[in-house]
Image (cartoon, rainbow, N blue to C red; front, side, top):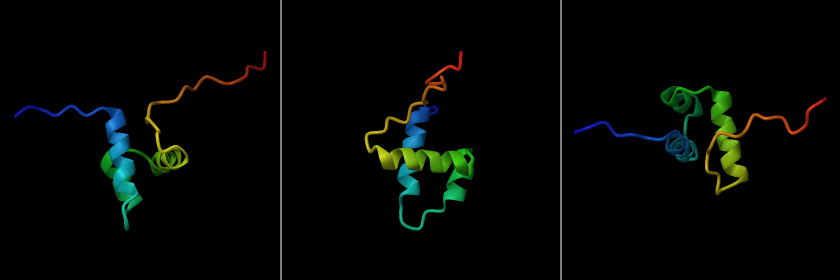
Length: 67
């Protein structure tokens, strides 16, 4: 039996699925997935505003440049 490869997007989708369950402990889930609570709530917020969220990393490029 080999290792099962899981993508980052699948882990994020799984986190949101578990976090939405009744009585879910967000802090414990964040520890389990090795993320901060801020990041956990960020993923929950993104999933709530867009059900078709693909959970990819978003660009960090600024929208505008001062120069």
